Image (cartoon, rainbow over all chains, first blue to last red; front, top):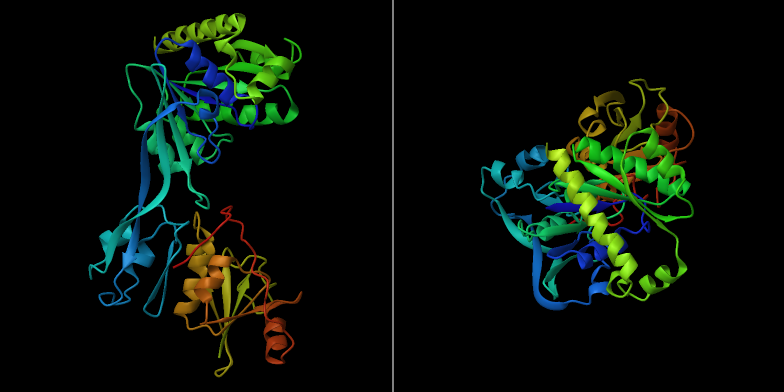
Length: 281
Length: 125
């Protein structure tokens, strides 16, 4: 099973929920797709097994062969190319590595070269693989790194995908192959606003989903009221707890030493699996 | 000398468009022939991204020497590069801005805006 954990607003507890789900499951892997600031491994402190570079293709231009026909400039959907006289300008951050410029060049003046945009670290924590995507500083798109992280999914395991915040391309990339979405929501105005954005995203992507309310002060809050009204399942509500927050800020995994929390995460896992199974029927 | 101004309408008296890349039209003035011409910037106007790059390419292809605009993004200014000088438009219509430029009353645009494309860092090779 591929379980995407998302939230919209940052800091609602995606990583808290994801890490503890993995720690509470029998046989689960963790995939950190928050590639701009991955922090899941601060909890696992996994033993590093492997580091894989993530590369994308960039066009490289042979000025000798180029006859300045503009075909490549016209063909680029993203407008990543400009041709000034015979000088080609490539805007790397606008380029999506689609390769169309290379295809349309009749002069064969364009070749594709590798550009490293990030790395993927694979670590070991018990029988879990901890996979962390890290985008290089200054790169504008995390999508290729996320795609590389998700290539390492193991179908026979529970794969917990810790998504980036927001609801843009990188979240779509992290979520689109998931079987099920778990939305972590924080009952604040900001949290509620962004919760509705990811709820929409899950609907657009046609994913079954349910909600965990985190850092609540009461069972009756703006998220639970909205979910009740709109017939959305709330699988668990975690109240704000200073002790858990402190342990978490020290990089400790609460389900490793708090049996009550462990029980709650085990039953949350069961609820997720049940709800997913039901959605398949 | 060829002068280009992004405009909202195909009129000499059109306001200067607040956007460089996503201006609907460009007014082109040929200083030698004293002619006004327009081109439809819809390919850049409708672009998902890189509108500034696309519009700047169109201007370079038309051998434009001077662009009068309120603002210009980093990528577009790289494309215009040494080919065209960028002047800051004043709050007046396109024709008046061209006259002000010819009279030497416009300043070079020295502030390149980061653009509206949401990419924090742009690089061009």
